[in-house]
Image (cartoon, rainbow over all chains, first blue to last red; front, side, top):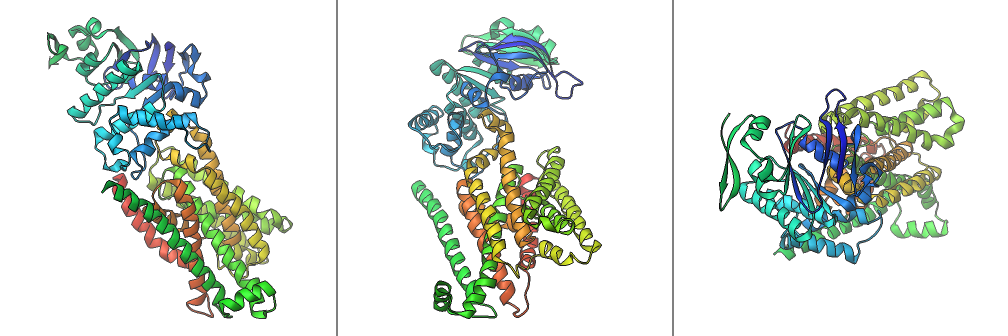
Length: 256
Length: 336
């Protein structure tokens, strides 16, 4: 995926994204981090065609996102949004099956391929035993897995996640990150996500994109770019960068 | 245990359908038999088939049109409510409350009073009026997000505007007052077979279309951006569902008059009985709505016979407290 000179503004007064020029590597986990209001979720929105940039272009397989039909794009790229809603009496399986919308006309009934995709998505997200349960009986972590199952049912090479760990307690946060990681390693999915926790980004990303004020401040492998100077410059927080044989690289905030 | 729960869910849905269908049949027959002229079921069927019974002939000319119109109007208004609630993602949307019916009624009155020769095209103008009112409410309340109470307030304002405009026309000329009161208040009296044809034709079209778009209604219950990520053309879905809703509400209003709260009450009961899946909710609401209006009309003309309480008044008496109940409940849901 290529991001070419993208500028985006919500109100035409202030650019939320300003001249973003970058790329997303196929088969990698790419994580966008940065302080509140830096434009990281907006960038994810532009990459998934929910916001159309005023200037510049985003190319997927060499083709501008704007030139994709909605359903064609939904077969290439699935998004798990930060906030989601569905009727409380809906079952896990029915909601997961919505991921097949891009493959069907409005009146078509479900096919063998649909069923296979749903089975696979439910198995990958460890939801097979919950398939007939209404979604209001699920915990936050389970619910987030259902949204990922729906995205997986789209069978896309790209999966985008906007702050997927927000609102989850620490067990479900890591459960989800492990799931994302295994989807990348076993299915070869290209993952792009927005995270708040820098240590989680370091541990689970091949590439980190650091954003500040609507621009990319740094991009590269975690161990190459995460330094005390960078974190101080971006977040205004003093940190110590540590190496541990068991934990790998991590940062410890020590003050501001 | 789990399987039992699922079984219970299926049974509850089927059971709800069976009960509503049975009740509709009973009320339908009862409504046809009772009134100032009473006949036995056998006399009715025999008379309808042979055309030899004078009482049955009167029932056929006066009572049957009224019954059929009540059935179609109830179905149309209820399904219009379901569709508007899907489009606005708001359980309080109702064609009567947010002014769609008032807009349709105003345009009908306007056309009837200014161009009486265009009477044939009144359904078309009613549709335009309903669409205008809907567009106003939608565009004015959408900007501030999906706040259900704000939408209701704007709807009440639009409703008051069109109701007022309709009444203003009524006062500006005495000759048309009769036709006006026929459109704005509903007693369902003096209904003709020609009117049955209008509501049966457009009502059936609208109800069939509404069932074709049940999947779109389901998709809209997701967040817009989630639906868009799935390749759903959200704007197109909203546009078509809205048009069908306005068609149903407008046609019911022109033929049967204004009924508040039906589109609110019936879908809400439907959601508790058969769930939020529009594949089931739409047909169930159609049947339950038909039952409700027919029941209201039958009670209205038999409770204090030979006088009549208009069905719309009975609906208002039931619906008012129900709206308060819903608003209080949605307070808890939306946390205002």
